[in-house]
Length: 319
Image 1 (cartoon, rainbow, N blue to C red):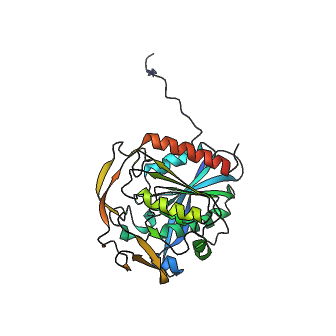
Image 2 (cartoon, helix red, strand yellow):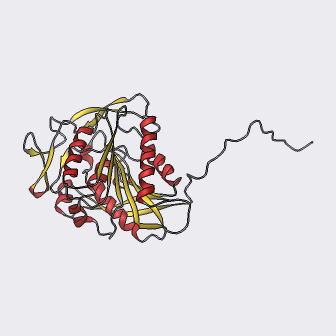
Image 3 (cartoon, helix red, strand yellow):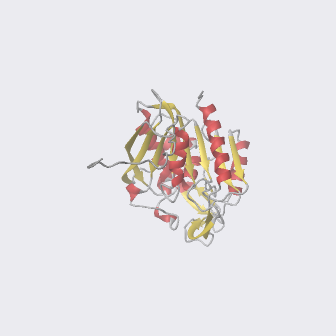
């Protein structure tokens, strides 16, 4: 027909699955501090006031819903954050993903960990609990913590009763802790006296960034103290195995700093000491290695996804 155009469909659109879409997304401010590790360990709050942001993705469903807090790695907001958020939302579990870098003027710290004390993330996590505790769509009795690498380390040690007493003012306790490939090379005073909540650690046998052997030793100490903790190790997986955009053949990142050869221990006054030298630990110590392999493992990712979903369904008492 003259003056009119005709659109001809050459193929049908792909079927869109909507169950992993958030019903609503909110960006919430987190008022926190930037501290040295020694300040954190001694309860010294004279740090730099810092405003971070967190992305609250509210799952489909009515009322107060269970939630998993997601803490990113030294790479920042990598694609695995979106992956896990979508997987959890599909289970009608909301997520809250903390951006621990942008508000501090950082993009990543893989190549220079000294840019930010590792324990800052724990304070950020507790401050995020304060922001979420009164939210009308969050069930404060069903909040779990999940983190990756540096964020996995924060997730693991955020369970310490001592840290809760010093820094967690929210009145909320996590229902569970889910660390992925955390750094377990540091021992803290009282680190087997943890909250009475389950810890489920997911590690990679080929991880040369945060070797799983150190986590195995810590798990044994935790179990000996009567804690509910389990470690799952994926035999063919490397560090960051759950990043769907990572290379499927693990690739070397030559500039990445790793403390895999170090043993670090907290001593009096919140001083972190290199056990070998008996001097305060520094990223200039000879034990600090450079270079680590990063790679995606679809098999391990699928297995971990199933394990996490199964665990959370039980922990949150979902149908």
